[in-house]
Length: 290
Image 1 (tube, rainbow, N blue to C red):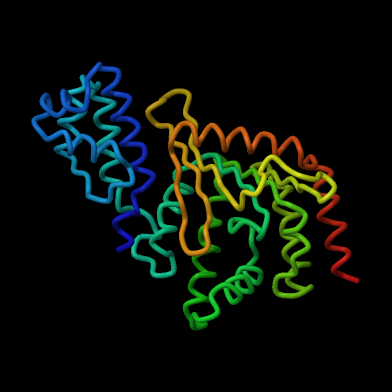
Image 2 (image 1 turned 135 degrees about the vertical axis):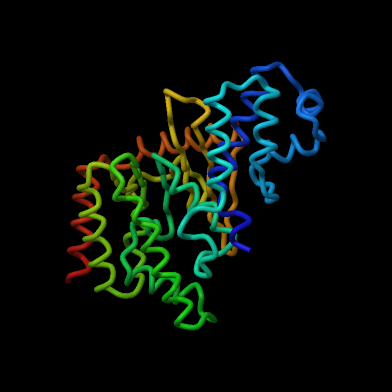
């Protein structure tokens, strides 16, 4: 059921916050379990955000208080527990279960970094482009199901109306030259990218063929979805999303996060800057007009 993973962003924050509180208190998982009156397995479950069992308010209070958390810290965790099943995507049949966490993370994030080398990122697709891509990849699906998926993808894009969220996308030239849906669809799609690039909270860079081998190596599409909060470190979150053919893979290990953040930084330095990228977009769009 989709509800089992709808609160992924909340659970990631809960997990990271509990680990930080426990380490601040100098407790092991076993010691915290003894103080909170629960099993070590319960502590482990609360510290593992991909565990799908439901978290409860009484237990989160017990764990937080056993770590000598302040009342403010405890209530912040309680609010996250209560937010587990919130979100428009809950029980939406057009959102695959494996993608459900991504929508949750995007909704909670204030920064989304994307690298795309096969398709225009979903957050930047036009309805016609999304429809053509789904029709190609979901050849056995009925049209009604495809239409629902397109509608849900468009709804995901509502996060781009938030001024607190910044999307930074590095798109390879091959994405622009892969004719999805025909020339007219590509003209509309590239024009949309040009318009989005003009927004203050969206940065689009193009990595041209002439750049040669890139820092991504043989990696495919990936996203780093994060929320930075200098005032409240317990409110931070960061996860890497890797898009596979039939599912999504989520990484939150610090070493993985650091590696992908470094790759993102190198890709930005190898891609053309925002101004030159808009020129590339306009030039490729003109080619489709011929």
